[in-house]
Length: 353
Image (cartoon, rainbow, N blue to C red):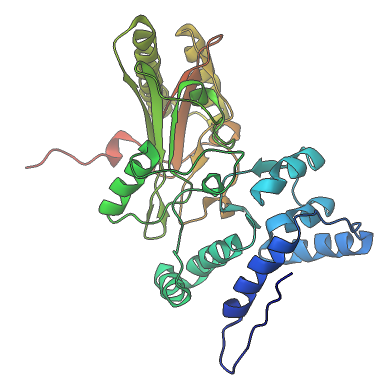
């Protein structure tokens, strides 16, 4: 069996040593950790998290947070190979098997190993600014934010995204516009994946058809501010495509109808989505409440309000909320999505001249 020696000299950076060491250490064993969880440690973690401004985990450290009761109702990232086990062990957690890192209120978490660098850079950007994070990333020879998620590495998720893929093309358009940072991954979903909640990974093996429906969801960060927008499109010319197109039109139509009601009647978030659900049924669709709108702000918005607009028992303010409309067919596996800012008429710029 080959052996390895590393010569360390003064001034070396820790990552220069720990990175290569981890590669060879990982090659030695893929066995899961078997040691039991310590009740004393769990109790300490719960107390410390309550006092800290932020708390979190890297890789399968999320299991420790789960045993300490810190994952219930929270969105959390972990290594793709541990995501199913984490979700099974802590069913109240919202396990994201694809994201490199996740911010959910005070909880921050990342995928495995080097993803901790991505998480650390995001925290540095929050506290010290994007420019400082960029300077550090350049010194470490890493991206300030990788393109795509863990699906590029996991054999159980989607295959590697090539340059011709819809996601890659959408990301390139954002880059060409100078929008290198996003607060959630760029999503392009087609076919039956258009019915899935955004927090769940796309189902693998869904092949684009000549007659199909797909939606695009982008979330660029402009300086520190979060942007968000999404719409549904169709391709082809068939009976099925005509129904897809109707679904896409109805999603956008319902968005404007619901926003108009809010502008006139000033409903709470919960009342607004109750109205949206009723109107969706009139149109022959189901409204997906897993995508119920959200706050936007300087990243991350969860520090201000982590819940959905659909659950808000208060009047949402203009230009601070995203209204999401996600429709799906009651029996067939397709849906449509449209989102934009909740705006007053007075927020729109007047005509030129």
